[in-house]
Length: 60
Image (cartoon, rainbow, N blue to C red; front, side, top):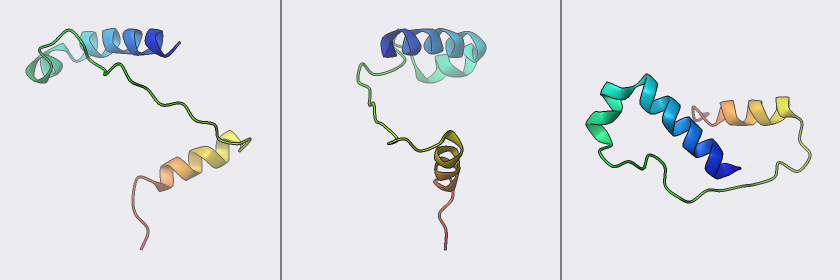
């Protein structure tokens, strides 16, 4: 599943942003072959989304 997601997103990104991507990625591989999967432990989507948004800017 991850392989399919990475392949399809790579094709879409390369198609939509071709001129920009071509400046930095000359290899046919866009993503690395590794991936990370984790569980949120039953937390609701809204709580998880709020947590991720808080990671964008440090507090304090």
